[in-house]
Image (tube, rainbow, N blue to C red; front, side):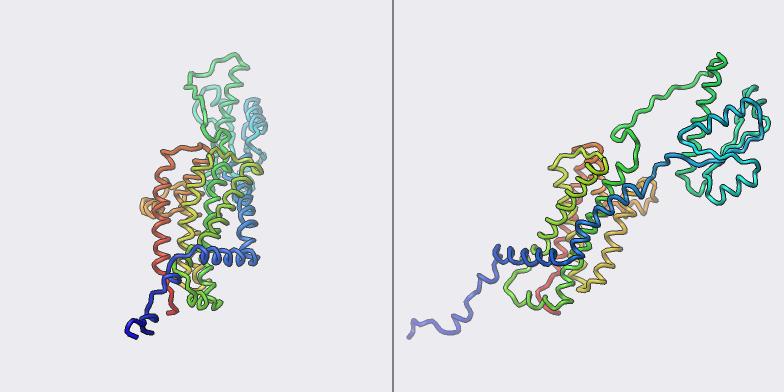
Length: 391
């Protein structure tokens, strides 16, 4: 009887099989989360339909290029030179010219945004031209849209210089000596804004997939009452978090591949990067936004609140402060400092580099290091604030 083990000693024996990490339990939890994604029409819509729609909106709906500027023409001079110059403006493929007969009419058209600028040919146009006086014409652009105003002024100036050159050649005259500029454009020879807008828009799409979807997963468990069942099971915190990360990581990488394929083969946007740096940049950014979404979800325990926080902290900075739409160097210094801590800024740089330049490791090194740091921070905070108790 002395050697018989007591009931208390059996009761206090450690239950290691339940507290140790189990791949079997993790696989079961991942399978359960995958089925939940498949059965949820909203998740399928956000994951596969919304990215394609956003790509086409950003690629075709947002266009920073001005193909043909609408301008007005007010001619006070009817001399042959004035008529020839007016004809050259009308023949320009970059200008859509409408003739006006009075300053009031052209001012009204500019106010109503029917034209974006106008050219005035003064009554002494021919006299000034023969005397070689400066500024024989006047160009007025609509400054309410500065980008368009710059295009208007540049197009009219180019048309003016071309007309002067053709006029001098027709009369056998030599143009004044000028500096000849030979222009070359690297990486984006056509200077199409779509070629850098679409790689940047992939950042916004990945933020939606990663942050928004994971911001709802833990909060949904609390709201539906299924968290109590999970807490009563022998799963560990690592198994629980990994089961929320792995399915959405796989989903996010599928979306990244889908976006690249659609951008490259449907929209004609170049992509010169190779799979290794693309996988590295995409994985680190996706882990960052997944950790961000899980952190908001586990701290709020409410889907509406988690979604609102994600909108403010993740989505809006990804659109406004990442360099996707607005040049960071033109922002005030305090705003630039804020943008320096936003993961989306570094993924925009990575995607634009991979798309237009290729595997430029000196350019990708800083984004990779920063994204690795943010992924570690957000996933670590999510693990810290995920507690296995009901309070």
